[in-house]
Amino acid sequence: MPGMIRRIVAASAVVCVFAGVVADVFAQSTADEIAKYRDALQDGNPAELWEARGEEMWKTPRGPKHVAFASCDLGQGAGVVKGAYAQLPRYFADAGRVMDLETRLVWCMVNQQGYTHADATKTVFGNGSAKRSDLEALAAYVTSRSQGVKMNVPLDEPHVHDMYALGEKMFYYRGGTHDFACATCHGDDGKRIRLQDLPNLTKVEGAQKAYTTWPAYRVSQGELRTFQWRLNDCFRQQRFPELVFGSDASIALTAYLAGRANGAEYRGPAIKR
Amino acid sequence: MQRRNIVRTASGALLIAATAGGVLYGCASAPADRADGQRAEAMLKSSFKAHGQATLDRLDQDETQRLCSEYAGRALPQPVAERIEKANLATIRFPADGKLVGDWKSGEKIAQSGRGFQYSDDPTKPAGANCYACHQLSPQELSYGTIGPSLYQFGKRRGFTDETRRYAWQKIYNAQAFNACSNMPRFGHRHILTDAQIRDVVALLVDPASPVNR
Image (tube, rainbow over all chains, first blue to last red; front, side, top):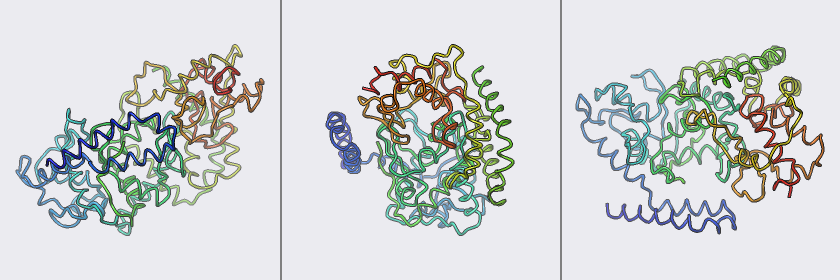
């Protein structure tokens, strides 16, 4: 634990130093410097705090039925966490649905631990220390146990294949006041918004690089963010209505992007600006 | 509230204007592809909830959005592109007093602001155009995006003429009149910016005193 704290303090110091050298950064190649900054942050990732909390929750009996996640099947058998995230989303016959990790966690909380759906999804996205989300911690723990595992979403399975195809359609769906689709920002190589580089998610390499680094600890938000959050916040910026947590659209898009990341090593939870 | 109604009316008008194009060219793709598109649309509608100003009707596509979604990721056939551009050109309105150029300093502020129309934004405050998210403009601003081309020296390069001023107005009002399925929002047609705001952004682009042209 002291080691972890020390690394987090070191990461904070890096942030302060970064702020101090902003002028120099602009004088040099901005993208290179931002890449160095990201590398420096990898040394101490506060996501470890979420992972530790999630691991404890995973192993402790919870909810009205006082049941631990040992009975929760993420696709690799009851209670198996290792490598599970690299093969999600997948079809779960007991639920009759393709599910991503977060949706599956909620399913286990409702169907095994006895929570109401409302209680299980009360705080899907946290707000730093002000409002903590159990789902974010659980997601951090489960995903961390797929580090180094190659993405292998079962695209041959017909339900998953179907969701992948729908996710692709949705990726290109333009709407809202500003005519934005996912592809508006993520459909071309080497583009950026302001100084933020944008992955080209229509290319395999772009999808691999992006998908395998979520969840991520967001330095600017002091919060660990999951892939459901990433999609939700993209749609907010697209000027769409609010994406419903665990909705079919969220799972279809996740299946599309995770499926395109197949073959790449999973590297999360990462740390981002 | 009133602004949203205007948007809907304006979209409806475009829908009528572009229907012929949809009937003619909407069938160009394979039927299975079309069916997937319709299922994706149904899925979208059950997957979002209204939040503040971002109501569910924002998921409804006008003909331009529908065609641009359908052909995304592949080459847009020339006749479809021409239909889209014609329909969008027909939406462009010039201000009643004919004045196209406002205050570039105010235009710079509008270009910097990314506020507006997100459910997290205050709908009573004026929206920005967020030009810098995608374009280089004033050289003093180093934090600019690259989704669109650099607009540095826009007026200087094109000449400080009536033609340049009219083009700038129209491009901001509805970029798809010139470039079907452009990534750029249709700021006038969709009532994202007011006429007064468009005037100020035009000034940022075409005023010889604007930092964009110095």
